[in-house]
Image 1 (cartoon, rainbow, N blue to C red):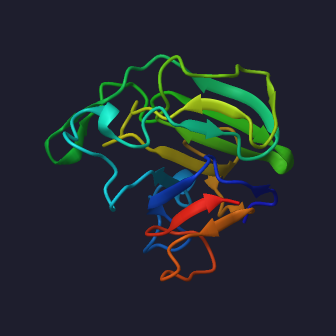
Image 2: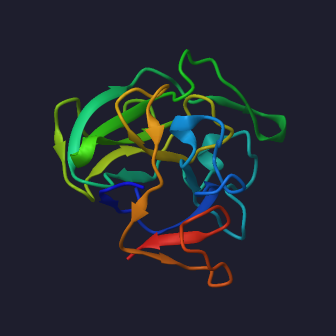
Length: 196
């Protein structure tokens, strides 16, 4: 469990497409760094896009602001990949060398790191070495890397290295679950949530 408490990395109401703290709800249970990761997207009438899903601009999440979830320092970022092409069935053709695509890594107290992936090329509002406060706008939602549609991939990990760091269940604060029919102790897939 994270020692720090984190706010959601967005403003407004978003849907949890993947993520949770159990094997059943996990984003990627067998990948240790992503075990407790979340994928957030905006939905309207229970759909993440309108019109043709091949177009990133038709996704409600695309180019939305991502905010810093906890005070910390930017220790790594990649800003080199165009958006991944979406093909039939919302499958992706990832031409990136790195599944994360463009990403930002923020170091917090207690050796915890926030990793936010698949962000939009050339949309960073910060650079390596910058100190960020919770709530600062840091980048925009994109579709770079191994992704089937624009969304926020967010995880907290106990260490710098993406391939070896252990993922942590995230203690979120200042949020509200907006679909009351789902009652769970922790945030998990199927919930609509927003920052209070």
